Amino acid sequence: MSRFLAACRGEEVDRPPVWIMRQAGRYLPEYRRLRQQAGSFFALCTNPHLAAEATLQPLRRFPLDAAIIFSDILLPLQALGVEVAFSENGGPRLPAPLTTPQQWARLAPSNSWDSLSFVGQALAQVRRHLPPEVALIGFCGAPWTLACYLLEGRGSSDWAQARRAAYQAPEELGRLLQTLGQAMGDYLVWQVRAGAQAVQVFDSWAGVLPADLYQALVVPALQRLLEQLEGLGVPRILYLGQGQHLLGAVRHLPLEVVSVDWRTPLAYAAQATGKGVQGNLDPAVLFAPPEEVIHRTRQMLRSAPPRGYIANLGHGIWPETPVEGVEAFLHAVRESP
Ligand code: CP3
Image (cartoon, rainbow, N blue to C red; front, side, top):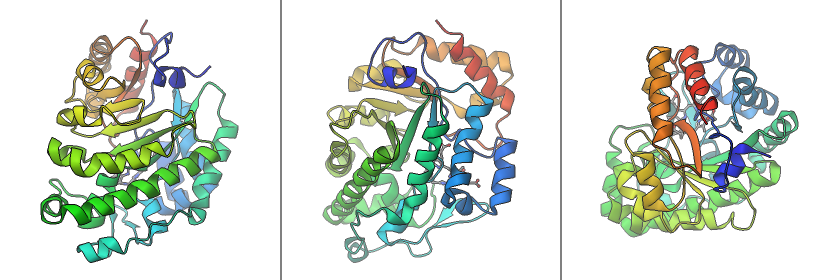
């Protein structure tokens, strides 16, 4: 029924399903209008009707195989007692980052998502509006990527504080990651009950860790997160940013699909993990002339495994992306045999 869910399960499909990471966003004029109407990104996320509308906007414009609920990986940190602010430009900020192991230990391992009821309401509302063949994806941040923001308080190019902590206080950091894994697994189960049919865990900054540390510190927390979804029949996708050296480490995790960026060859990711794969066009390609986008997309499709493959970008779409580039990408996937 759903090409996307079938591909996640490794079943044969007529063509690869396709969706776009960050498909609702500033490259769409209708999103910019909605965000202005809402007043802020935060207001857009926390109003279930507006969040549902933002989720559906790209589906109205493009023939996509999946919708992803409009929210942010940092919002659930508020349910764990951490304040998060979204500045108008310059990305998210935590006014009070957790810098010491004592502060990490105080992170409340809450399993109540009542304060995020807008996410559950938006999921239910979107599901009602989607045709049955379009799947609805729920998501969360991976423990390591969330810890990066918790420790640094803002985005970083090298995540120096988080990496230092991994060597200075590995045990305490490991416990923080476990707490986050427990909480995010519970959050995803809650999203599935509200209507999510697949889940994606974003480990955007996975690749800043070497493989041995990722294995020792992060994989146990991911295990704890993912095993909570066991038996729900919902495909689990892990986005592994810059994670070419980490494919072996995630091989034994209970998940169905590994999502990789443009640096990681799709066939290699499939072979190294034994899982389905998702990705991996460089978001920058969409700025090329449409013929070049089509050429590069076809090249990507030829390199993908015949089963268990979902076409996507290698990371979130950029705000300045021309809509023609998106159309060319989708056209190339949809006409593929
Ligand atoms: O994919 C979708 O369409 C669903 C919505 C979604 C958002 N954030 C909305 C958003 C998803 C899945 C995310 C995940 C997310 N958020 C990640 C993991 C994926 C990735 O890109 O690596 C991370 C690291 C974040 C944290 C975050 N939120 C950052 C770094 C930023 C600023 C960067 C930017 O694009 O401005 C945000 C803000 C944010 N989250 C926006 C959107 C649409 C932009 C807000 C705006 O409208 O100004």
